[in-house]
Structure formats: C-alpha cells, structure tokens
Amino acid sequence: MCLLYKGGGDGPGLGFIGPVKLIASQSPNKVVKDILKSTFEDPSGAPPSPAPTVPTPIDINKTAGDDEVHVGTSAVPPGPAPTVPTPIDVNKTSKDDDARIPVELWDAWVWNTRHSKSLRCAFLSKFLQCPLQTLQEWLLRVWRRRLTKETTAYLCWRGTSSLSELEAIRECIEKACLADWWDWKGGSRIHFWRWPQAHRGALRKGHQAYVKGPLPRYRKLQPNERNPKVRAKISAKLENVLLKGYIRPGKVKSLTGYFGVPKGLSDICMVYNASRSGLNDALWSPNFGLPTVETLLRGVEFGTWMGDIDLGEMFLNFCLDENLHAYCGVDLSPFCPASQRRTRWERWVRCLMGLKVSPYLRIKGLLLGLEWVLGETTSPSNVFHWERVCLNLPGSPDYNPQLPWVSKVKKDPQGQ
Image 1 (cartoon, rainbow, N blue to C red):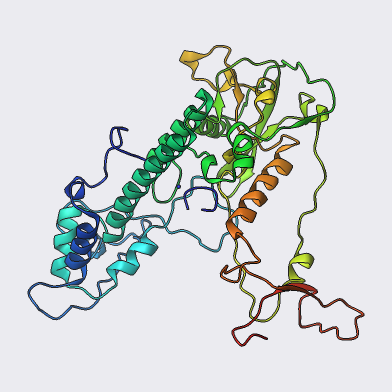
Image 2 (image 1 turned 90 degrees about the horizontal axis):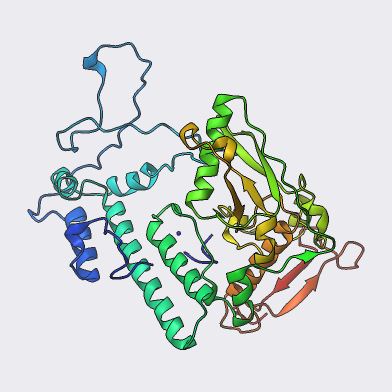
C-alpha cells in the first residue's frame, strides 16, 4: 500500500547502480520518447504486423520428441532458450511468501500492442527486456532521486537534527535503493517526515507501549527443530528479517520464542511468541473492534466499489518502542550454520507479530496515516468530501433496506 511511503531514494554518490546504463545520461523526456517511439512506431512506414503471441509454458512431462517442443516466438532473437515461468494460480487465496510475481501478465499487455516484429527484435537486442521493465527501472531511479532531495530539504528546514533522526533518514534512503518495482528487497521503513509533525517522533522511534507489571527476565534457550525441511525454511525466514534489519544485535535481558506453521502449498508462516517469556502479561493494550462481513455490508449498496489491499510486512513496517528492545530478544543459535554454531542472541527493533501491543499500535498508526491521506473532508475540492451523515436504521418510518444503515453523503453535481 502506498499511503505510507512508496506509493517500494537514491541520489548521486549513494552507490546505487542504475539498471540501464544506456539511458543513464539522457533526459527523462527523451528517454520516454525514445522508448515509446522505438516500441510502437516503425520508421520504415511499413504497416504494423499482427500482435505477437505470448510464449506458453512447456509441459515438461510431455514425452514427445524434440521436434515437437517450441520455446518462445519467432520475434525473439536467437540465443539460449529462455526460462519458462511456472504458471501461477491467481485464484488461490493463500500463497507462499516467496511466490513468484507474474510479471509476464503486464509484459504481455505491452507485447500485444500493435508494432512490427522487427522493432520488437531491435528493442530486445538493445535492452534485453520488455519496454515496460525499462520504464519501471527508469521511474525507480527518478523516485529515488526525488526521495533524496526531499530528505535533504527536510533536514535544511529542520536546521539541527539528532543522530537518531539522521540514522533513520539514512536507513530510509538505503532501503529505497534496495527496492525494486514490485517489492522492498531490503525491507522498508516509514518515511516519518511526510507525516504530521505531532506524530513524527513516535513513527521514528516507535509508539510508546503501556507497561502494567514487571518486565520478565526469561532466558530459556530456543529448542532446535528436528525436521530438516522445516529447519531449513525457518532458517530462511530468520535470515530474511536479519538481512532487512528487523532483528539487530544489542543488549538482551529477556528472550522470546518462535516456531513455524504450514502456509500455502510448501511454505511456512513464522509465529513469534512473546507470551512464552511472560512479556505479554506485563503489557497493556486497549481493546478495539474489527469489522466483520455484517458490518461491511451495512455500508454497501448497488454501485458500491470495494477493493482488497494487502499490506506486506504490516507490523514490521513500524518501529518497536525502544524501551522494549532488550525484552524482545531472539535466540538464533540453533539455526546458525554448523561452522558458526555459538550462542547468538539478538533483539527485535520492529513490531513483531505475537507481541500483545503490536495490533493496537500498528492499526493506530495505519489509521493516522489514512486520516492524513484523506485530507480535509469538509473541503468541497476534496474528492473524499462529504456534507452530511444519513441514518437509515431498521424500524425508522422511512427505512429502505436497499440503502446502507449509515452513510456519508456529498452533494451531487445538481446540488441535491
């Protein structure tokens, strides 16, 4: 979801290597113009050829001879046979965390536009990829540079900044440099300077957690996993959060636990257990309601548009309260390589799933961001503007079951 940051910087001197060196020194307008011209226009004036077909996956179990196997299309330049992507079941509701992104769905849309086969071959020979990928890489570079300029302007406006604030900005830029068009490869961090000033400190250091009792001193070691396949998957999950900086070295006063549960076809989902140490018993979090299907349907009527937004690493996007870092230790020793087997304790610096206060604090942060993005709803120029609240409650004389129970209504263009 882009409302918090990317909506996935790099600047000169930050060590970012551009993806397409051929266009590194050209102006933005010229890059876009050249790409579109070379892709969709034929300089010879010849009429466009029919849209090329998208390569279809090969049935590797087929026992036919070699003469029956065809990879790609005639528009692909000669060379080694490309790797055929594994088909993805887009209707499956639970997918592996490392499931491949079907980028060919977007690339096929571009390749199926009207252009000549000769131009397609020329473009592939020069850029070795789809025009859409070239544009994505260029736009990523523009976004990173703008992010760097934005942080520089913010620091100039601030005048003086603390060391922790400078470190937070440096980490934001670093993670933006590691991100690609589809994913935050190096992890993510909230761009706190874009938020209202009253919330910047909490978003940078973590919202304060409420403590109602003595914090634990639990130091029971993490048990080993006997199943070698599950053990390998747990090691990969731990390595992922370590590389992204969500778990870091530091003083540890108490340990938390973790284990894996099945997810998807062959993946596991990590469960981080803060109740094991008694940490959750020492924390307090207020109750808050979550919408159900029934409450959702109360605001739905004919013509309503709905969308499903999945925030990747929702809890891990937010920093953990600094006062809890030492009590959220992680024993990594059982999953270290055999050559490096030793006692290794590190600690969480992001809100882990399994900590009592994480759901409340993270939903709170998300709703603060949503309120900020929606803007001033009383302004008629705002697309989210509403004028009055209409009640359509059961038992009312004018109750209409076709309309929502409670709705925010704006004036239509006729002023009604």
